[in-house]
Length: 345
Image (tube, rainbow, N blue to C red; front, side, top):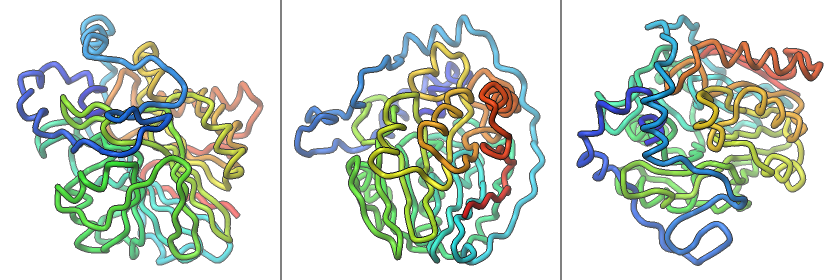
């Protein structure tokens, strides 16, 4: 749903309410907690969520976004079967989709190989940059991490292909397993915040994020969203998914330790009054890098799908400016096209 709600092209789709009603996720049933009131999930600290009237205000008064080029060149890579011993390797695929490799385990985050992200193959933002890894060139995939239920992060056609080809475990927030099983994707496991599981030699912990979930018009916050910390003998990788700025970055460092690599979103942040509560901007991404104590960070969530009012390369420009203001080298927080590979010891 986010791909529609955060797109300047939303208004032509408002007549498709019946389709969006049918896209909703099942209702989660579980014990009441600090983040679940018995019906909906919520972020631990209060923040301003944006609703339909805010979307209308954005569309009517904030003007069109800059034109993106129809095609952005990239150079697909063929990943090795595993990372070198003692290394954490990340290959950028597109948007929030990455391949994390360490300690003989291969993990995909929020995988998307579809040409559009939306409720159907013809509705939703279209890709402007090809995936950085061809689907058929993937190494064996042992696990998939799903940060939340929005269409640009939970892509059912891609998940069905991966389930058939690789039979991976799928780790996601509370309630997501029922949605995936309903849609023919097996192998899913629900996690609550701070709950951990093991995959091979790795410990994978589901952690907080300041965000929300929705796939249709009637399932707002029915499924839990979050981030992931993947840790093993060779190091660790933090995958932020989608998030606004909040105290969770410092809390994750305090509870789980500073990651070797942090995958942090830098795109879909304009207009700021609308996006601030749900998406960090490049300056906040650098602040998150520092709060996490990451040895190195990698930019995700930019350059593939046009979802907001900034230009295609504005996130990278603003990232470099934010690093310069803090006296940090560009090597501390890298931005790469799809297919780029980053390693950390």
